[in-house]
Length: 104
Image 1 (cartoon, rainbow, N blue to C red):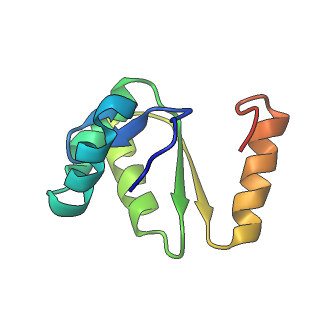
Image 2 (cartoon, rainbow, N blue to C red):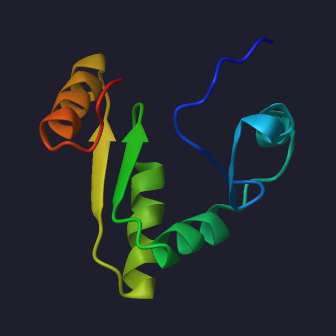
């Protein structure tokens, strides 16, 4: 698989770390084959003051888990759900409007 240049780092929930282009193939393979360290990952992100979490796709299971972990940590966060392509487009437009992203 040929990968293009990354514009943002990728957060690995198997390694609980941000990864960059030079090691992304190994990291993505690990994401498919290794155990996910969900609680560790969310606690790490909360510790880095990440305050917005977006669940993409149907359901709210992961959002619920993130909310419980954040509550236990005493952190106030925003959790967004995107169940349809329209939701994703609306999120992208809102992030552009707020200057959080320049392109997507």
